[in-house]
Amino acid sequence: MDCIALITILVFAALIAGIFIGALYMAIQNLHQENGNLRDRIAALESAQAKHLPYHTADEIENATAAINAIQFDLDFKKDLLDNALAHLHQARNGNGKQ
Image (cartoon, rainbow, N blue to C red; front, side, top):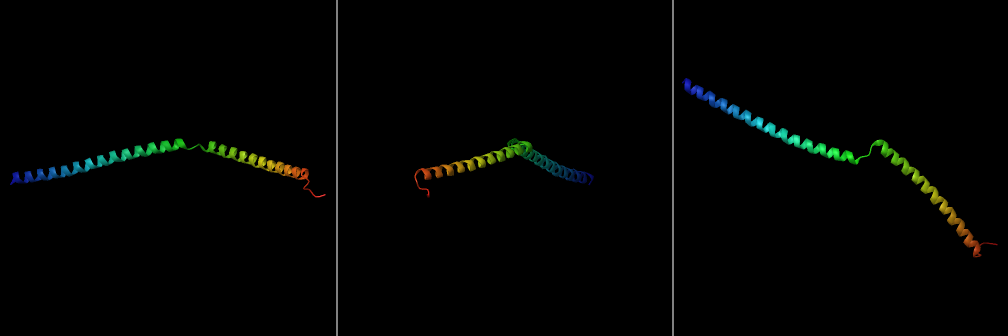
């Protein structure tokens, strides 16, 4: 009976060890997969960061764009004034003005 009990204990211990080794193997596989996912995520974040401008640079670009827009508006206004004055001169030259 001692021999049967010893064999039963050894089989049970082997079964427990097999389950433990299987669980440990799955945990290691999951860690490897998670590590690979994290490496991919880090690479994606690093490439995305390279595409973004620093705050100071983006702010300077916005300021320069606003200045260019203001100058463009001023030039367009002056061009409209010149076009208007030329239209009055042409109208006066053609005798279409009131006398």
